[in-house]
Figure 1 (cartoon, rainbow, N blue to C red):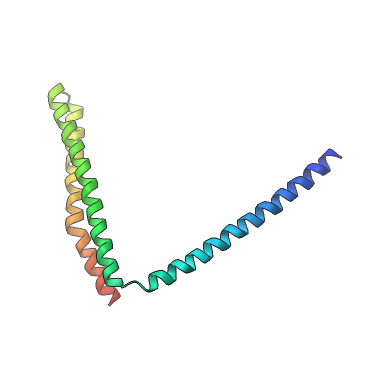
Figure 2: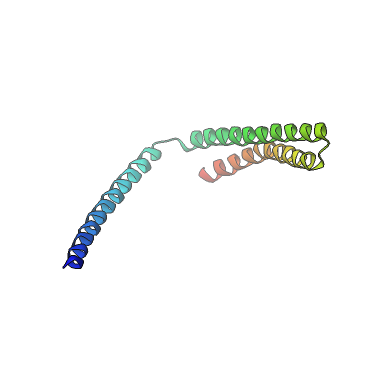
Length: 119
């Protein structure tokens, strides 16, 4: 008899969870439709320009942070005469410089490609 009660409560919990999932999915779909209608009113050229500016800034800032971290490791490696820290610092410094170069060179190219694709 106890097993049948457990199965009944389990099925009630499953029914409740299905209703909750259905409601969450419905709200998500309504929010998505609302967002699509909002983005339909946005000027695409202006949006691409702002998005490219933000992307370029974020990539350059991450590269600068990585480069500074690499310089700190490099100085630490020279101070302690630790070849492992020197190597790690040089790798981080070069990766930071590479990210900054990607932000400066590649993002404007992507912006031009997206702008020309939208027009």
